[in-house]
Amino acid sequence: MTSVNIDPARLAIFDSLVSSIAEEMGAALRHTSLSPNIKERADFSCAVFDREGQLLAQAAHIPVHLGAMPESVRAVERLAPWQPGDLTILNDPFLGGTHLPDVTMVSPVFAHEAPDGAEPIGYVASRAHQADIGGMAPGSMPVARELIQEGIVIPPIRLYRAGQLVEEAMDLILRNVRTPDERRGDFNAQIAAQRLGERRIADLHRDYGDDAYLL
Image (cartoon, rainbow, N blue to C red; front, side):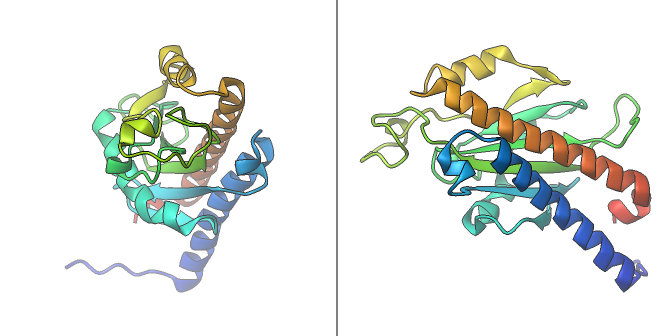
């Protein structure tokens, strides 16, 4: 087994920096969202993952989200290979989701000026409770006996491909909810949080390099 010398002070600083990125993502999501579920109830979570999909840092949001979120990150890895600007969406409870209104977005993070074909240096993820996701009744707690009665089930799909919105994916989701304008607004808030997290992680990698970030 190869031993690695780690400076405890440097590690503590790095840990605080990564945790602050998850916190900043959450602040951006909350302040730019439209629905009370996110803006007032703060029913969302943000986290940072390494290139293997393991949790690096989480903000103090909703613990039950964070316990399952690594499974969602692993679920989207089947969509690789990745390009900068890719962003995925899912809510499948059999793939790390909770209930269907909790919609997760996961995006790969690339180093600044990464060459074509480069691998991601990590992932950022957010999960937010959408006020309506379709189904047999408005809201998020229908008296359902089957999953399909709860609303639209979103498998891991790309919502953005190389920085471009996949319009068909967004349209399909919005056609299956009761409040499409509000959902689009909350999705956009989540996307903004994702993009912020991507930039901050890329900056951190630039400042600390592979040896520190990919440890």
